[in-house]
Length: 252
Image (cartoon, rainbow, N blue to C red; front, side, top):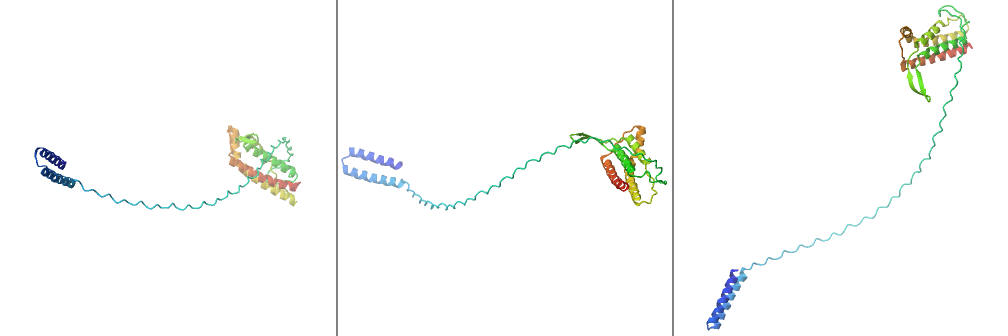
């Protein structure tokens, strides 16, 4: 900026001298020298041009990867046919209730006396075995829980024991025990042995209820039997019944 100002001042002075002085050639030479000096200073003051940076070469284009061939399509598995529908079985109709049969009348039994006494075979026969079976049934029935059923399905259970009926049937059962037989007939002897075994099995099963029910009859107390106790008595009665059936077969 300073060099340009000097140059303008020189030019202005030169023009002024040219106008006033007579020697035109000297003035022109002086002007040319001063212009050259000012130009040289101006050029020197100009900044050196910065070389342009070397251009970075573009990266080599990477070719796209070779496409893998499409996988061979796996055919869908053959569908398994659905199983043939099995129709529900036709419901079995509920059995028709069988009319209650009239119980077989108990046979008249000759008084037997004590089981340890000497007796005859007149009262120990097939009819007596049936009578004993009926008494055992009545004793067990007094202990058996009662069921209230709806559509043949138990909806409630009453475990109350009928102590009065139990004691009545039990006392009759004990007083009707048959004494030992006196005959030498092996069939009758075998039948009596089966009878004694059956009576012992059943008596042991129900013995625990005798005293308790006698007391309940007097005091008016209510007794109940557990399902487990009843199942045991029921199983023992069936064992005794099977033996009595064998004895009956020998006597008929």
